[in-house]
Length: 263
Image (cartoon, rainbow, N blue to C red; front, side, top):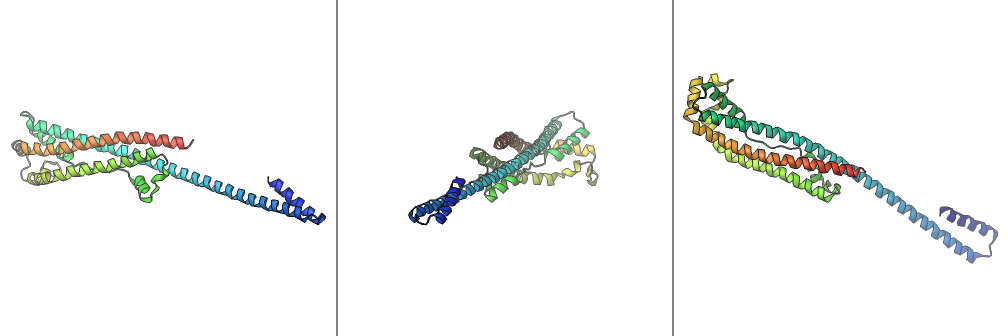
């Protein structure tokens, strides 16, 4: 098409030099040439706009891929974090069970009873905590870039997934707030650090016989305290297990999306 209009232009100037008598025809040809030039300009603009659109789409796709990779990395880290929490909380639950069994036993030795008590205070009486890798999601939310993830169904799942993070964190906090008023006075009253081998010598009555006697005489108080921690730890484990499974499923969907968008 470009050669066609150049040919017209060349012909026009040639005819202008050689034939001055056909001005009306030349004007028509000039008009045709002018229209052709306009068409060429319009075509050039449309091509430039299309190229710009392609560039913007490529940049958007690259940004989407980057965010998805970051979300995958965050959620894989969360799998490790949740697994660690579950392992620690299960260890705490086990220490509660062993401590309770020792308190109820009539044959357990003083040294084993004290050991079970110390294991409980070390692992079982620790409050669960919640933490997760939210930097990428918070970046997407705060910058308004969530729409860069074009798959609306996946985008909604991501939002819902991190809403579950907030729900579990709040549930753990509520359980902690409920237990602390019971746990604080108990810890203060019973001076649990006297069961810790590294600090027991600081207390006046730290012999195994005296400590074991105290545990047996106040076993209901100790079991009641342990039961509260057992309950909140069990509830936290259930929440972490559910969130861990959902995290694994989300990782698969993110990886599938990343693979599909790269094709």
